[in-house]
Every structure is written in structure tokens, then in C-alpha cells.
Length: 87
Image 1 (cartoon, one colour):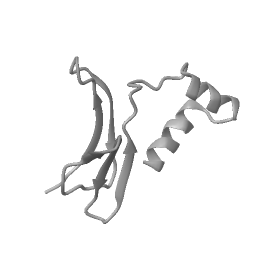
Image 2: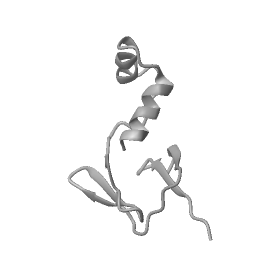
Image 3: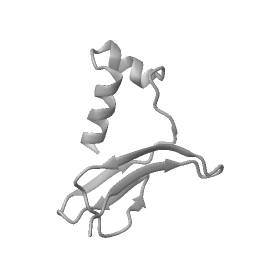
């Protein structure tokens, strides 16, 4: 049997899927939990992932955060990769 881990952001009021990511080579054995604005998820490998529950449902290339990163020399693709690797 094969399992795949997914991370997606769904707008609470509309039910619209805001974004979706596949987490490669990661298996979770329990549902994540929300504590003090952070989502905690423990993997079967013993890693605990902590993700800030950000009220900003969209991170696009024209957002201030992405533009600041670009000014510092980090492309949008590299920024998203870095965020996912840090999660």
C-alpha cells in the first residue's frame, strides 16, 4: 500500500481551494492539530512539522512579501521552494 501526503488551503467561508501541495516521501499517521495559530503534524518518520496558519490566503508574485524577496535576489520559485522546505 502506498500513501501520499497533501497540504491544501481551503477558504473556510467559501470552500474554495486556495492552493495545494504534495509532500514527497512523507507519511503522516495522525491528523494535524491547530494550537495558537500554528498547525502541528507528526510524520511516521518522527519529524514534527509546524506551519503558521496565515490569514493571507494567497502568496503570488506581485505580493509585497514576494517582491521583497525578489529585491533581495530570491526568485518567486526559489522563495516557494524555501518556504516548503522550511515547513
